[in-house]
Amino acid sequence: KNRCDDEFSVDLQAKRLKAIMMAAAELAALRLDDHPPGQMSGISGDQKNHVFHLLDKNEDGRISSEELKEVMEELGADREDAMELMQLIDANNDGSLSSDEFELFQRQ
Image (cartoon, rainbow, N blue to C red; front, side, top):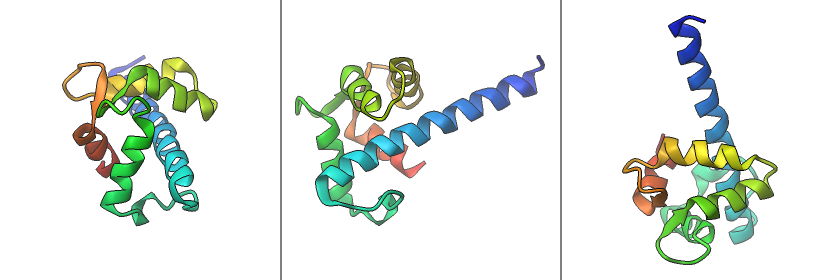
């Protein structure tokens, strides 16, 4: 394997995990207000904030790896995918997602 193949593989994995997380966010949005899939861009900032709070099941202001695993398992993803995704978007590596990290992820 060469370096280009490794970078391509990492990029593909990141895109796959982002698609899973966006599905998780859309699932939360659907629970919030019957938005059709693929319409996250049409959801207002207040609703995106509410999506974060729906994923933050214990309401501590952070999405823990356990909360992320639960949502992703509901979507049929592996727990390992949740851990990889957490590593990708947890900017400060504290093992949870703040609303700022979640918002940055949604804008990427």
